[in-house]
Image 1 (cartoon, rainbow, N blue to C red):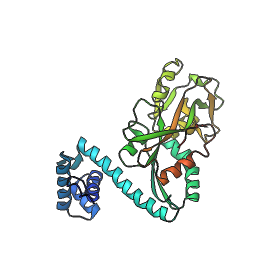
Image 2: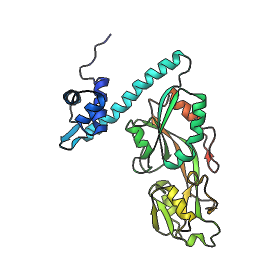
Image 3: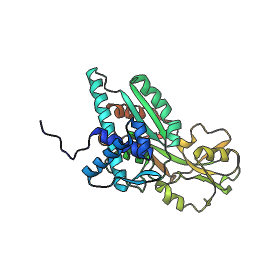
Image 4: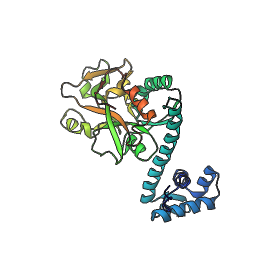
Length: 305
């Protein structure tokens, strides 16, 4: 057998890097790991020496990853997760049931509320050994895909086709297409005359051209925290909104929904995972369930897992 390269980082060194980044300091990381602070400091210095870069800025307020540290910690999380998957899949394969173990999912709010619950119910029924963990992440900036890139999630439910490129090492597949609609108080005689209610996650680059061409849409005068707050404000008669289908699942009767016509905008929703985890049994099991049933008002796309 070949000898281990002296510059390779051991799994415990990777765990230390992640713990320091998560805890924000050496002392807190040591407590979380059950180690002494000197052992954590020694491990970080050893990792920095092997990598050839400073990974943390030390100060009175703790330790913060440098740009090199951010990159190293993201890779450390992904490598440690692959080690977990290796163990779980080998054990499952020995029992002819490979789909078991934790599955970390990042999703934006409307997907977590209206897309995931029935999917997770079927997943648990068919694969009781899988343990889903869902985090709701705002779909702004790096969004849910950034959680996967940083090793904090195995798979993300994300909006696709925006201006931000997919981070390196990730793969994405489309699941559904959501049409946008005009949303307004039920029975209002002139909903387009109402003030616009909007929220930060709405109307990214996939709708920007359409939005800019609509001279009837005013600047938003009400900014809400999320799409649920938008619906509440519209229901209360405080304005109108332009919203995608997932956000409108289960809308109250006091909310009217008007089709925006043949050239209405839409956004594509899919899953994002790493190239390494795409073939894992837990991710594949989730993808199969995602492709079965979808909420009313959205259409399934035909791309394969």
